[in-house]
Length: 230
Image: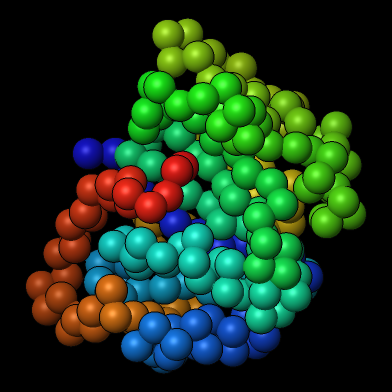
């Protein structure tokens, strides 16, 4: 099984505002958010870090509400919010919300879940550097447009989108994109938090006790919800 990762990237809002908004969301869906020192082995571990006025939330492994909570935070704080996702180590993608509305979205393999989707739907997942620049003004379109390309799974490429990037055309290219958005990535090379951790739970993500043996909590296979088209 490949890597699954869900992240919210909040533009222009510092940690305290984002914490307040995420707490509101969690309570609205029958859960909560509490500060607690945790490792990523913990079922409910969420990591939050703010740098230069932008804030990143890394959600627990089994959290499936990343788009919904990103939408909520965007509307609540009236700010641009990226909902990022790495799916099974195969791709990275985003949905960009502004005041709770989708203004842009990108998936390098738009027919990943369904090979029969329409051309219009494929086009809807192209992503737009120009739209991003409209809402994230410090990012120049020419500095991110090379990330927003469709991938050919039959061709392996060792090329990086930009000089200075760390990753080639793969799932972890997301980190290079996040750097352009000035969003921190609060996990270290051992996959442990290097920022403040919180216990996050909702009605869908139950609250569980810490794993006493410190063993890795298995990551569930994240399947496409029937009501969403990724």
